[in-house]
Length: 478
Image (cartoon, rainbow, N blue to C red; front, top):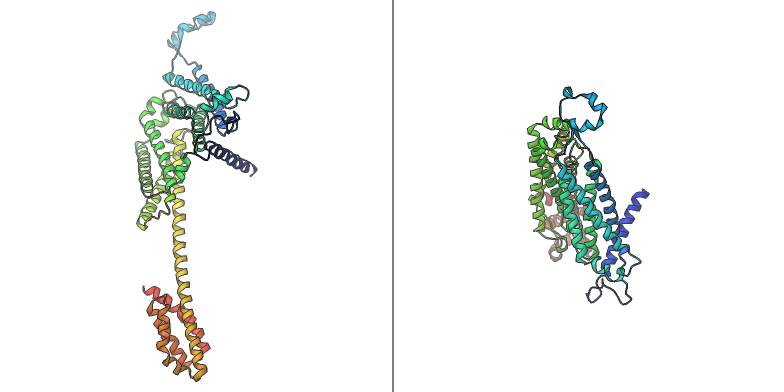
């Protein structure tokens, strides 16, 4: 509990620093204040920015990624030039220098991918290390002159660096973690796999913090700005489309990508073609359907424009589609994630398949919540309408009974008073009529008949019961 509270407090503090940094960039007149001020100091020191944490994490994760890739690069794989029966082992044991006459070093088919992974990690280490040194520089004169002009809110230099790192790691993720990659399914290069994804997430997170500190709209704000269930549809589209790419690549290239791991090659060879077709069909239907709902919400209106209610038909269609997708993904997860199937190994397909399934179910839960809320709002609205009508009827009847009492005090005969003042009562009712006229006439006639036979007090009690029953019957009739 304390760990979650500390984590939430850290996030809040980081975002507050971004807001304060964004507020210090522009003055009241709208001019840029990120350069040197009158005292020669930047408005917000770079070392206090929340992006420092991003660069530190990026440096550490890129270092671990480089170590894993370099270790794989230095790994030797030997094979025999001749058959074992043709080798004279006595000669080899007598002179070990003749070992390479019989054994040769095999060059891995993925050598180019390994070199690319090493190069990407090296570039990231150099760039993030340099930027981090500029951020924490507290002793040189460049901290007042050059670094604030290169790094900080609204500085294009830092923006270009972060965009380059995001694109670099998007490409690196594909070359490292797909079925043909050096950290793909079955290769068991978990350090390289997870550090590659960590580098991508860190670069994107740091870019988000730059947008926030610059007073611009971030991707998170863009997702949260759309009404109804559009944010969840956007997440579902991203996850399902990624899952489709990874599954389609594995379906086409598993024979080449699993040559170095015979047991993985055997596992993929035993996967049914129907499973691949069902997998790809499910991902295609999901990301195309989610894209349609995203476009429908985006072209409708934004939250800032006010409410964006959906029609009943649209809600029903969306609910039916979500139920079908949820059933389809549960069936897919049940079969694909079992041992010996397409999503059973730790890798991109495994994680994106589970993430897409959870996203679809979460969207369905939101739809059910909104549906129940609409039902509750309708019931409350009808109840409020009934209460308003009941108060109006009771108010008119009390007014009429008061007139009857006044007349009774003068003449002492209730029945004669009801007959003689019926026109006056109906005129008063028409002036304040808030409900249906049939209800008013029915209530008046019922109360009038009861007034002819009962006392005034018993008629007053009957009004409440008659008004309620007649209103309910009128609503049922409508």
